[in-house]
Length: 522
Image 1 (cartoon, rainbow, N blue to C red):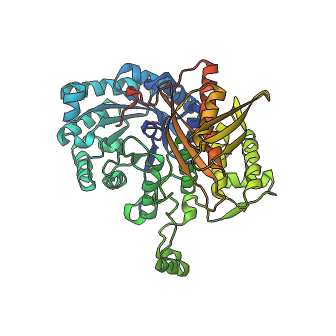
Image 2: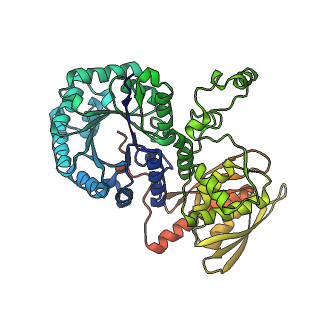
Image 3: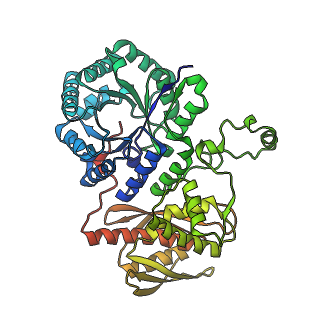
């Protein structure tokens, strides 16, 4: 059997970040880029450098790590965008410039207000410019799935002739269906000259819930690159889910005759890292990485599983990096055992991160009888922000009675050991704690969203809280963990306040989460 390789192009840091509330800090982007490289993705689309100075700096920082994966940046078909991408990605030994322009009739008429010939001319000149800077060029005709087939073939032919080495066919608005998409790729293979000389790619959105199915239809029809995101995050209903499309190819290898370079045992840890950073929790019934993906509650299923796991399990949990262990560590576990378990769970860390996390682990072990993998993951995902300062939560006292206002007394300590204490009363303990934090730090926030999630089981399980807030018209996100959910929320809230204060000290202005130029959902 001849197995063909399919490249995995991850756009979590570009298209994924465009999802509302998913804006990431530079530190978070670097952490995700390292996780993607460890996952062994072929191409990392690190961002859209022309969107803002912050985006440019982030793409450059990722490229300058020279991770091993190809680092790609997105550009519209104009000179300034293309040159900015090159300047951002050139620090990586393997880099790519990705240019796009819309081609569908509705985009031509209402967005671009350009004739067909003008669009082709614009694409060709932009690809030629990019080619003069970089050998690896990708071109995308935005909204390709709603573009007339004959015109699409004409555009793709011109792009190849101009020097594109990869041509991506996006289903930008998640409109197509598998059989229709298959016909589109078959048409291109038949009518585009020199199409065998380039890599055909596919980029699908999930508006009708068919992004994975449409991507698989495309590779079945000749595409050899899939553009996708971790956990399927992205604008609107999201993008093709990397973990789902990769495991479909692996599990049904005899059908597709395809393979990828992905280290699938890294899928669950990477999924968890992205969920923790973005604050978008993984649904329990999410394929591949959800809590229920390998759970079998029905009696007949359990009986079959006991006889032979293949009766109801088409993948092993270990295939995707999901541990079957329960109790993993206790209060007497040492630093070495803790570090070993952290690395087994897919969280490589430096000594500073381990030291911070180990302190949190010891606190938890004193308060909680049983420590599970989920507890370790929660600590690793939230240790950074809670330890970054300039303010640290030293103590929190809550008084709450039915029918009365709740009272919170908060004690904060700064880097120099100075303490400040404030009490505040409000309608609920979380509200009271947040109000006290604002008064102590003189940072006023507007809470937009408060999410609570438990990573493990039991009455003493930790609470993972993520908050979305606004400050002076800009959005921020924070996360915190504790077996006390008011403390977890306070850690999350203080994490946001600390981020704002650090940026003010550095004289930086935060990049808005929703910048119009940033929205390029090819």
